[in-house]
Each structure stands twice: as structure tokens, then as C-alpha cells.
Image (tube, rainbow over all chains, first blue to last red):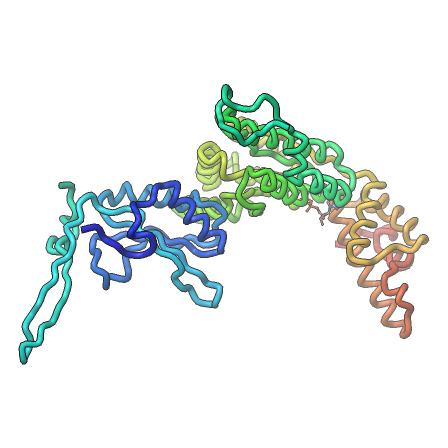
Length: 141
Length: 304
Ligand SMILES: Nc1ncnc2c1ncn2[C@@H]1O[C@H](COP(=O)(O)OP(=O)(O)O)[C@@H](O)[C@H]1O
Ligand SMILES: [Mg+2]
């Protein structure tokens, strides 16, 4: 099941050229650019791991593309996203976030229904991938 | 005229290109003309900038026609004594390179050894890389670049910064222009000990000392930009000042002129305030005495 989170996630995966164009858009607005990765795609997992520090005050997309490449090499089968934050209002607020890499196979989510008192049903989602401990998720299939 | 935006590839492309129109559309001539009036003298430097502009214009067209394989390398060295306009021209260069589409922005990041080299093991690489990240897409101006290399200490962390710089200058040709600046003789020595740098420099531009006449003209221009002027008597005194100042220690060409004028403005202000009611004209006029009280006219040591 294809993960849809952030911007453009209903489109085919962005090419590197398209990623570069998005990064240029961010830096032309003066936004700081972050690279984040995870192997826990639950929608409530808001804070992914950061690959290096946020990159502030860039004039070229190149440092971001280089960092993305390094992150892809280190985590070949993780989700990687690029996010951009805007400090214009005096605090950093997220302006854009999109997926820049996804695992080859995405097992998706299970809906778990549990019976509560008075036949009330509680729903929750769990990711099949996180059944496995961290190093064993999304291994090449 | 021919259509330059047609299909690419040498065979399918147009027969001729209207370079004059390309040039006009880039707006570069207007900018170069402005530059000509805002910078006194520096004829050889201006000629080099114009040359580089032509090169970029042609290479841009060649790229569009599928004739160019790589962008030209544009790392440069600027050599000359202090105050000869190296930093000022670097700003201009960033603007020209940006207007001709060579770099994404006209950003100029000015650094020296301390911004690149760390104080302990493992400190230098992240520091240099951080600077490079910010400089990409613009110009990195390394002032007194030769301080990166210390021959007397082979474990000096500067060597690490040098290696990272060389690597990036090689890889990221299109994203970054590095300008090394400093005294000519020390730079020469630096290049002989670091041939890798010399071979990556596409242009060596020399900044000669200004003549007395040029320095006076620079002073007058600086004043004009701030809505001041020299009275006719002050003009003659200022010319004398420049000739004397040159022979004293710590002379720094146009920078000495700027400093001298800043002090003259202070003295003028004090003189005006002490005289009560003054004409509007007087507010903008530097008089002979504002310059003459300078210690340069004594036989003592020069000011600052
Ligand atoms: N040719 C020139 N025309 C007008 N002003 C100049 C010229 N050259 C230098 N200046 C001024 O002199 C000062 C010192 O110049 P700078 O570029 O900092 O010299 P450098 O970097 O070579 O030490 C600056 O304020 C600059 O504006
Ligand atoms: Mg300087």
C-alpha cells in the first residue's frame, strides 16, 4: 500500500529534477530545508529522524541534493522526506513536506477493531512493517 | 533574425545567432556601464570583467544549441595591496555572473582562515563544509587565502580546509565560484606550494595601486555618493594629503581615502556645531581646514 503523506503524495514519485525544483522553490523563499528518514510510517509518527542539521540560508539546492544522496545510501529502504520551515513569523513553521524516497515494498496498515463496553468499537491502525524490530523492517524482498 | 530557441543539436540548430540581441537582452551592458562610472580607474580589471561577460554570453548560447559540453570554470584569484578594490570588484563579479545565469544568486560570502579552519581535530571539516553549503549558488571570497597554508606546520588544520576546497572546486563547477584574494607575492608563494589551487584558477586578476589622481577622484566620488563635496580650496589640500599619505606606513589605497574622509566629516560636523547658524550649503561642504588638521601634515606618525 503506497504511503501518502505530505505534498504530492498522490502523484508518481518525484524525479530528482523535480525534487531539485522544489528545493529551489524553498530556498528562494528563504526557508530552511531538512532531510528526515524513518522506517515507522505511522501517520502519528510526526517526528522522523533528522539526517544532519536543518540547512539554513542556502542559495543552491546542491547541498540538499548531496545530503539526500548520502541519506539514501545510508538508508536504502527507508522513507525519506524533505521538509522546509519558514522563520518569517519569528518561529519555525513547516511550509512544505514531501516524500523523496520510499521502500521498495510497502506492506501497508492494518485496521484493528476492538470491542469496548456496550458493544462500542474502537479502531486503531498499525503498520505491518513495525511488527518487526527496527533493523528488520523493509528488508529487500 | 534567426531563432535561437529552436531544436538543439548542431545539425538542427539555426544558422546564425544575434549575439548583439542576446547581449542587449541580458542587460549586462547597462550594468557594466554603471560599473564603469561607480569604480574609478581599474581599466584592466574592467576589461577582464567584460571579457568574462562575453565568454559567458557565448557559452550560454552554445549550451542552448547543444554545442557546449561543460560550463567554463570561473574560479579566480585577485591580487593587490589593501584597498585596491578587490572586495568591491568581487561583489560586482557576483552580480555579473548571476545576471549571465552562471550562478543562481548574486550572493557573495566573504571568509578568511578563521571561518574555515577549526581549533581541534575534527573541527575543520564541518566548519569548512558549512561555509561551502551557504556559498553554493554564489561566490565564495577567501580573503588572504594564503593563511590557509602554513608551511612551518605540516599538521596545521588549514591543510584539511584546502583539501575540501579543492574537492568542491572540482566537483561543483556549476554551483560555486571561488575567488582567492590577497597580496600578490604571498599568493604566488601559496600557489607554488599548492599547485592544485593554481591549476583550478581560470583567471588571475591584478589590482594595481591607484595613482594620486585616481585616489582623489575616488574620494570625490565617495563624497558625492553621500551628498558631500570638497570646497575648491579643500580639493587642492586633499590632493596634497593623498600624496603625503601614500608615503606613510599602513597606507591602504582607497580605504585610506575613505577613512580620511570619514575623519574630515567628523571635523566638519564639529566645526559647524560650534559655529551656531550655518548655511545649508555649508552642511554639505568639506573645507580646507577639515583636512589640513590631519596629522598626515605634521611630521608625526599618521593617524590610525
Ligand atoms: N576604483 C574604486 N572606485 C571607487 N571606490 C573604490 C574603488 N576601489 C576601492 N574603492 C573603495 O575603497 C574601499 C576599499 O576597497 P576594498 O574593495 O575593500 O579593497 P580591498 O578588498 O582590495 O582591500 C571600499 O570602500 C571601496 O568602496
Ligand atoms: Mg578586502
